[in-house]
Image (tube, rainbow, N blue to C red; front, top):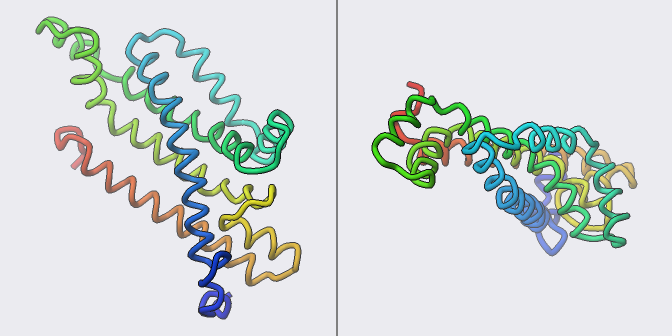
Amino acid sequence: MWEYLTDSFNWSGNEGIWARIVEHLWYTFAALGLSVVIALPIGLRIGHTRRGAFLAINLGNAARALPSLGLLMIAVLLTDQIGFLPVLIALVALGIPPILASTYAGLSGVDAATIDAARGMGMTGREILTKVEIPIGLPLIISGIRSATLQIVSTATIAALVSLGGLGRYVVDGLKLRDFPQMFTGALLVALLAIALDALFALIGRIAVSPGLKIS
């Protein structure tokens, strides 16, 4: 594996390691972005109103229980195509539940007395949401996005099963060719990428969260 990583040929070109990392990041952030766009407004809505939580959370958990390969096959059958769209659907299905659950938990955990005090100051429902509930619930919201990121980046290797790129290409091709150094290289790079992205979102959380909400 060390020889594979230190061979400059494996890092260059359209099928080199750098290119595969960029492809993997594209799959990851495309799915994460769509997951946030879908799950965050729903989580904010049910966390603020306390209505629809049971249905939304349980549907999300049901999607999380499905195996990623099974989700990919279902997406292929539904879209009747092999390519980026089925992979995106499968990854988004994995990314939505942790964001939805954490957003709801963050807002629903806000002390009722705090909300009553904000309402007594004349704040509207929208102002309570944006100026009270979201800032207080932000640590949990970011935690949910971090969790979704780890699930998506580690599962994006399935893109190689439908003839796409990414770091999963090394795992799939290595298995097919019985090239175990290539397989281990792909697995190691996915693990390192997941650690790097988790550290990135941890840093974002430290910057974005109000100092008064941080645990010293």
